[in-house]
Every structure is written in C-alpha cells, then in structure tokens.
Image 1 (cartoon, rainbow, N blue to C red):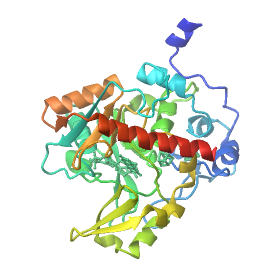
Image 2 (image 1 turned 45 degrees about the horizontal axis):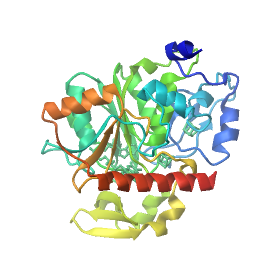
Image 3 (image 1 turned 30 degrees about the horizontal axis):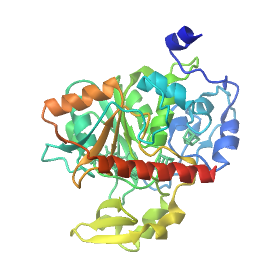
Length: 360
Ligand SMILES: Cc1cc2nc3c(=O)[nH]c(=O)nc-3n(C[C@H](O)[C@H](O)[C@H](O)COP(=O)(O)OP(=O)(O)OC[C@H]3O[C@@H](n4cnc5c(N)ncnc54)[C@H](O)[C@@H]3O)c2cc1C
Ligand code: SF4
Ligand code: SF4
C-alpha cells in the first residue's frame, strides 16, 4: 500500500467525474465560499466569470444549457476537497505535520531586486525571479496580473522582460487570475510560470496533481509563485477609494498595520482604516486559512522583512533552482530574515487560521 502511494502519479480524490457545474454552484458558489480564483473558468469553456475592462468580476456562471458533467470544474476547485496532506507529500516532499502556518519550506530569505528599472511592491522579488526564470529558459511565459489606469486588474502573459515589469505592484481587488494560464497555453507557452494568491496556487496544484482522464496541459505549468494573503477585496473597494483619491492619481496601494495606505502620484500617503473597508472583503476569504501560500514553489510577502525587501520562502527543488540562480546571476541581493520577522509572520498566519475556524 505504501509503495503504491509513493509510485502514484496523481492525487487520488473520490471520483467526482459525475459531478458537474450544478454541484459546484450548489456547494461552493451558492454557499458564498468561492474565492474567485478562476480555476474552473480556466479549464472549462462553458464557465465564465464576467470580468474585464468595463465589468466587475462576478461569480462563476454556466453559459451553455447542456452540462456534460465532465467533472473538471468540481475536481479542480480548491473549495470542494483539498487533500492537503497528500498534496504536501507530493509537491513538497513531506507533510506539514505540526500545521505550522509558515508551511513546509527549505530556506527563507529577504530578497531585493538589483535591477534599477524594477520598482516592485516590496523588494521586487517576484518580478526579478521571473526575469531570471525567463532569461534562463526555465519558463517561456509568466502569467502576471497588471491593472489599467483605474486599477482594474487583468492578466497578461509576459514572454519578455519589458512586459514582466508591467506586473510589479499589488492589486488589492479580486480577479480570477488563473484564467491567464489558459491564455498562456493558447499562446503556445510550454513552460508556464504563474504568480497569484494562496487560493489560486491551491487550484493549480489540484490541476497539476489530481487523477482525472482529460488532457488539460497540466505538464506545461512549471513554476508557481504564491503571494502571502490576509484577505482580498471586492471591486467595489475601488469606487470607495476613488472618493478619497481619484483612481487615476493612485501610484501604489499597500496595507500596513490596520490601514490601507494609498500613495498618490505626488508621493502623499492617504490612510484608510481597515475597519472602514471590512464590508468589501471577498466572501470566499472568510474560509481561507492559508496565509503564506503553503503549496507554492516560492512564496513571497512583505511582512517579516525591512521596507524595500521581500520575504521569500523556498519550498520545492524547482523554487530553489530559481532563487539560487537569481542570486548567483545578479538579479537579486539577499539578506537574512530575523527570528522577529518569522515570529510576526507566524502571528499573522495564526490569526488568519483562527478567524477561518471561527467562520466554519
Ligand atoms: C490581495 C493581496 C493581499 C496581500 N496580502 C499580504 C499580506 O497580508 N502580507 C504580506 O506580507 N504580503 C501580502 N501580499 C503580498 C505583497 O503585497 C507583495 O505582492 C509581495 O510582497 C511581493 O512583492 P514584490 O515586490 O516581491 O513583487 P513585485 O515584483 O511587485 O510583483 C508582484 C507580482 O504580484 C502579482 N500580483 C499583484 N496583484 C495581484 C493579484 N491581485 N492577484 C494575483 N497576482 C497579483 C503581479 O503579477 C506581480 O507579478 C498581498 C498581495 C496581494 C495581491
Ligand atoms: S473557488 Fe475558484 S474554482 Fe471554485 S468555483 Fe470559485 S472560481 Fe471556480
Ligand atoms: S484570503 Fe484566501 S481566498 Fe481570499 S484572496 Fe487571499 S488566498 Fe484567496
């Protein structure tokens, strides 16, 4: 039995292949726990999440009358069943037996970009790591989330350094970024990198590992960079912020302590108490206990390091090759993370997990 488990290529779930979108709708969407990750949409042409230039990101909908009940949407959704221990064994090589909120990791660092033309949210680590991975040929496209001049997010497939740089910076509204993976496949990419939130990494890990009979191109997904995430916000947040700072004047948005900090183009910081924007938190975030993107190859956040640096956890062999290569080839500089920094991440991660349990 042990040998069979070790040799199996895929994570075995109970067979969901007779469950279609109506089951997904009933058990996830209608229960208000959909995180708008976009995984179901990316792998089924019959499901849409209205989003884009003039539209608000809505919940997933079925757009054709006839459901083939192929089961992919139900199987891939991170909110149906998430066999964490098995995913950890398969992807990270071991289980997170003591349920540490930092997840299983091989090493952690503070990283900062050495490229003068990368101005990231924190240390520009994500953009720089992808730049190395692209230039070293480890990936041939990176799915990034950019925004328009009114801060509406959208995905882009970056196959060049110039496009990659457009992704830098955090967009604090929900967007089904996993759909960009489908675009990357359609654009002919064979080695895809993706950056996104913990729920999106969970969805893609299911795509990569669960046992199912269809060819969906999962072997093309090569590098997953996960962002730390306490919560994300509905698009209505932008209209609220616009009343304080016109969106076209916004340069950067950050969360520090108990404030949303909006930087305008003159460098002035406008602070909005998080209590004032609670109502905009995504419904699906209420059941999410993953703060540090525990299933990513590399996880990146701001908490834990000094300003201007990114905190980076390396979780897999592939992640290690990218981070080491980026350091050795002069893309990023590296510093240690103090125990105090790790303690702070643990405190926040524990708080998120406790809130989730209260909501269950
Ligand atoms: C919604 C959200 C909540 C976050 N919450 C926390 C937190 O609680 N604590 C913490 O320490 N860090 C948090 N982060 C991460 C932090 O804001 C930075 O993204 C991270 O430190 C990387 O910074 P960087 O300078 O290395 O990345 P950069 O080089 O600036 O690159 C950032 C990358 O993130 C991607 N991205 C931006 N917005 C989104 C989005 N909405 N969805 C998917 N991808 C996106 C872009 O494609 C870009 O490639 C959050 C990020 C997001 C998007
Ligand atoms: S959580 Fe993701 S996969 Fe599940 S229904 Fe929502 S968008 Fe689809
Ligand atoms: S809190 Fe969880 S569900 Fe919400 S955006 Fe972050 S990772 Fe996704």
